[in-house]
Length: 453
Image (tube, rainbow, N blue to C red; front, side):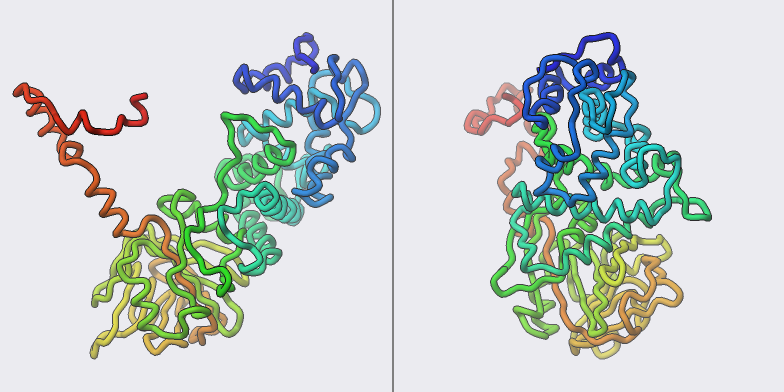
């Protein structure tokens, strides 16, 4: 293995210092492993290089050829502070700097690499179209990598929505967050700002490079991009979710990726019944609802509390609406009003159905109690969520409805809370008992706390 120590490679030595002492040999050894050799001298001195073909051999099952070429371009764009070998191979120092910047770098360090991967080595700026093409390759590679490495967390893409379409739409959504110039040009400061605000880009890169090159640092497991699917009757289900959509929605939830998902209702399985929909979703904790209309538009909402039938609006500012097709977007609350969620059934005077945002008769998303009909009346935007009309037609016909419980069901939460001793709930009682000299018999019977050793 090549050991870094020569005065020539100061840039690479500084980058290597970001890794723990036990991780440095792993990072240094990747070059030889990718080349399939065991060299012991700096590649700048031996002329040994990493070729595009070698990268393809390693990453071929996790990324398209165009994405692997982009990774190669990114590596090639790095000035390692030592003489480069003739030709277009990657030297050891370039690889070390690339790994450090992708796995442990800042937005400032990653921006030039993204520019090189999107546009080419010598570019000073790129267009939003080029960034979108790069993001399509990257999102697609992230999805492929999750599947290849067994990180799908019990989701089954073959029983889910259109994944290639989802890849395109998520790439477009992420690119839309760029604050580019009037000419749709992005320079390094524009990319730095984007990478700083949108952590998903760095996470996808980290996943692809960490897993694609088999880095395997014990202290640095691959980023979690999906929640766990805890329950879904896959043999009967053709669900509206797709993997890229889960990558977009899951980080927006209060509990993030740690909240497991479970199917509560699907018209595929439970039929077109509003009573069944309400029965399956009431008192089930936070939920995500997806609706597909007969024009092919797909949209939905997240509610942070259990659905309960009552005449008032419910929920809080963590609720949001979203669009899935023809574009992916999340619409969070505006603060204008608190009309987050509404459910009513069997009332004479108030509307009967399920709604989110806006007001009676003008909901951001509304499903009527007679099932099969709904509306998305947002002119120009929903007052609660700032969303436009989400459906194909303002008054739409339902094709499919699907509801997922996200997070721990309320009954499990109650059981967990009951398990906690009264002494945990009231440390003052514990302190008083100790002051009076009484020993805590229950304390001796407890399992030791994890962090106590």
